[in-house]
Image (cartoon, rainbow, N blue to C red):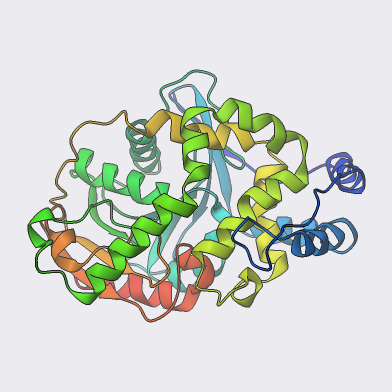
Length: 368
């Protein structure tokens, strides 16, 4: 018999004191030899972040925000999964599961909860090995198994039919829900469709498609080192990330510079507190290795991508890592009901542009 256990985030003062001690003792490298971010996150900015994190940042504020909402854990396939469960007061509300990716967390969705709960019962889980979910002790927790776990949770909550949304790894999980559990997952939306370019279009590329290919090439040449490391040696990486808060923060924040629509600095689109709130979900849970391991579990281990046949929607934000034109998307998403290219926003769409994201999602699902 399964059990839903109520949960509250209650980080001990000892853990917060330990963080400050480690920040105080941090040893920083010398400065980069360029005047931009091309060698990674600059020393000057990390020094500012270190000082602010140590002396001014207030975790209890974020903790209180999360604890406004009902949270639970439930054991699925031998692992405790943490999730927020926010019920709507709307009489005709459908259920909607929102899934984050790396290096994101449930913090990404905090600002879209109120606009979305007007129409949907929201379920917002932490991925296995992330945040407040348990850490797998055996291999096998890949995207397909996570989707199976999510479907199990939704059925336990008595949602026989539900909608799903996700970006990054959340996009992969959401797509797996659509392809493997279409009898329960009756509609999906993603801001990073898991499709590649259509080779048949290479002689007739649109301007958008040309830019998308240039973006993908930049990612391969200059931006994918983290992925190679996490998909091949996550355990080795984990020692530094779990022991050093500066290492964990730098590993994450550099991606918020590269993947947000921030005009040259992540704090142009997100506050320093928001950025550190997200980092804290990795630091406090010591999940540097366990979160990275999802790459090892999932990369190069899947079969042929299955077509998506349930009603689906796609929104492309201009600073997304991988962008796909509508005709590329339609090759896999056979029942595409909604496709939009937004004017602003990036990889962390709900975090960066909560109002746009929420209104876009509402419009998408209404179009079904």
